Length: 359
Ligand SMILES: Cc1ncc(COP(=O)(O)O)c(C=O)c1O
Image (cartoon, rainbow, N blue to C red):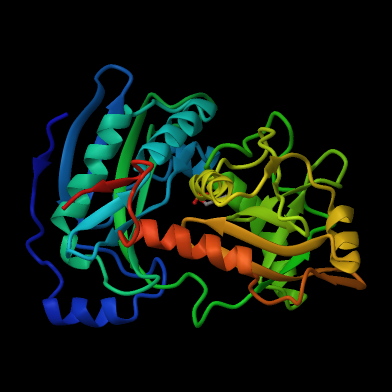
């Protein structure tokens, strides 16, 4: 695919950019450019372009505003020790977007075009990739229906965009365990639904539960399965892992209601290489609660692109609390986090072919 290039006439001043990069927070400031590719049923994918970052014109009857036919991805570009920039396993994001688009009846962008679009944006806006531990350039590729009309049917036109935003640590401040609220009333996804797709509706569904978590003094919400309300699924934006006292690591199996995380897959591989048995199976919330008391569950952590690996402290529910181990970041959590960060920041040899150098 050939991309036309229209450079921004008003790039952000280098001094202003340096100020942003010194304390980027998450998802608030965007780089100078974006990549756009249009799709129509007649023409297929066309009009691939690098454009100045800016607002879109949206018709009020655009179907995405009404029926939420959209998907997105999230991946990061990391500054390397030689000053270059690398993406971490972007092929898995591209492949997941294919699956998400298929579930949402959206057109499928070929993997190589997804990768070319991400690389073009990173190369163009490389000055926006921050230095420093935990910092990165977060890429947000997304596809949305953009046909005008209120008929409920797959859109005849769509648009793929990639935007980028410098990111610091997702949870600000030093690494600290997060507390989780066990949602009693809300579930995230049901069998046959969209749980395995990265689509906005799943996140919209999680917001009221997240509000409840905050109201109960917790950082995040953990969802149980929608049928038996018993099996641990995932957080609003992260997969979960449990470390048992014999070193075995358990993570909820992929049932179609859980998002298949790139970080989850990487953690499973790294944990096995470090000698841990890793079980992908259903994990009963009572196994967690009891294990925290009798010492069977020694560490709990969550993982995802945004926050890498985050230790979990307390699990809370109405009238109760369970804390695995001493509630502090455990040795296995810390070891895996370091191993992953070392790969992403190019400090460890890339023996898996996970690191895709862009510059
Ligand atoms: C619901 C959900 N689960 C898990 C993850 C972790 O996925 P990844 O490791 O690919 O970022 C994310 C983040 O993208 C997510 O939104």
